[in-house]
Length: 250
Image: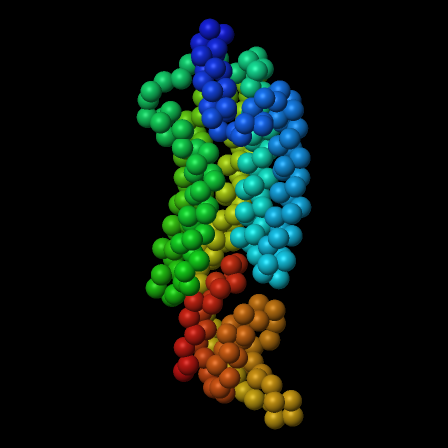
């Protein structure tokens, strides 16, 4: 988009797409009114989505938090798009191409939104000692590598006044899926931990006692206690994501 004449057809196309996407009662609003409506929607999503999850499930899981962040960001992005839709001085002056880079960059938003979700589904299946590495690697592939790879071709458009909006958006949104994989990266870096755990029965309290002490051993001790049998166990776990991937009685 090198001239205002080139920007005008794109603006018309964007307006037509918006009218097909939004409901009939919103397309008649001005861009500022539409932006204000979605800002209020972002606040509502931030308040009521976790509340509904808590009322239904009795807890706030990481999935609930991630889903809430997704809805809030979606509303904020729509509000931002509506606000800047007619402000062509913020449009990039770099002409688009039909090259491989632009085709890859076209999937950036999809990669940031659904890459972490796909990675989460892969690791939602209980990992084992044989499968945890490739499950975690797949999550990093979809949640970290894919957003970064699809973002890089878009940096060429961050020039001039467009950089004031484009650069924070590219870096900020790309950082979100990466942050969701932080603990997964830590486990891939440090590897699985393994320890021998001895479980015995305290006669006075009838409680199962673990031979290992310290907060770092709470997870393997709890996994061995679940057997409710005295003896020695080999427990393998992932420290950062707090998942036990193997318990074997010796």
